[in-house]
Structures are given as C-alpha cells and as structure tokens.
Image 1 (cartoon, rainbow, N blue to C red):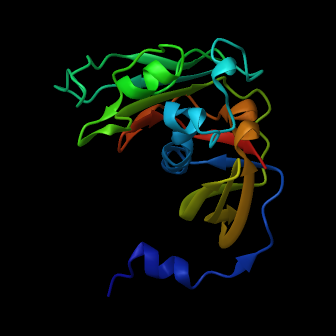
Image 2 (cartoon, rainbow, N blue to C red; image 1 turned 120 degrees about the vertical axis):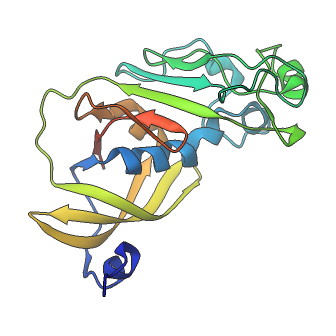
Length: 209
C-alpha cells in the first residue's frame, strides 16, 4: 500500500528549532509569499496592521535586489471596483514602489494606484498572481532543505511555522521563526529555475533564520 506523503511526515522525529541558512524549495517560498503578502495591503497599512507605513512607499526597504510583481489572472481585466487590473511592481530592486489597494483605500492612502479590489468583494483587497525574483546567492552553504511547510502563520511581524526539513538525507519536523523584514531583506535565489507554484512564480531560495 502506498503511503501518502502527509501520513509519512506525521511519523517524523522532531528536531530543535531551525537556526542558520536553509534552502527553501519553490513550494515553500510560494507558501511564505502568500502568507505574508497582506503586509502590502493598503487596508492593513492604513490600520497599522502592517510592518510598513504609507511613508515607506518609494523608499528602499531591503538591501538585497528583490522584485515582487503583481500580475492579473489571465483574462481578468478589471477588479470588482471596475478598476483596470494591471501589472504592478510592489517591490522593485528592494524599493517598495506600490501596494495593493482598492478604490476606498486608494483615496485614504494618498491616491495610490487602485485595481486590487477582491474579485468577490469590492470592499476588501486581494491579490491574484505574483512573481518573486531574488538576487542569486553567491555562498551556497546551508544547514538543510525545507521541503514542505505543514503549518504557517504571520503574526506581529513574524513568520512562524513547522516544516519538514532534510538534514543529511534524513527528514525531520522542525519549527522555524523568521522576522518578515529579515526574510525579504536577506532572501537569495538558490538557482535560476523559476516556476509557477499555484499563483506564485519563484525559485528555490536561501533563507537565513
């Protein structure tokens, strides 16, 4: 009988919390991006529920060269506000150049570009597809490989989760905690193989924890 991956992982031994440099697979990077993307939502910024403020827009926030690009779904031309959906750079070469906004919070946040109303609810903000580019890593030494994130949450500026981590060909369950700003500020691309994982196009990345 074939054992499902999830059932196999339940039997893994726990290992102490992760510290050091780890390779996160593209699947794991996609999970982190989707979990943390709401810090770039204008409603969260306006209500002080983000690590960023309106004044941060246009400023270089991250030393490394990363890009985070919002891309509409194929065939979706307008959001539920009736605003045109277009490609939008949220982060460009480490600089926060824009945020996700609907018409309401566009007006409340110094008339930043709208076009990101949730497709099912014009009063909330949403994202569609995302492209995440990171500067190529020069030093590729690492402690282990994060193959699968079984649980993840973003609270109070921190990413907290449990992952299946491969150490020297043995799989363990490990807890991890990453400061959101530290993730975006230090993440590096591990290879040049970018691929779509659900709604996020990204590569494997080196992350320091």
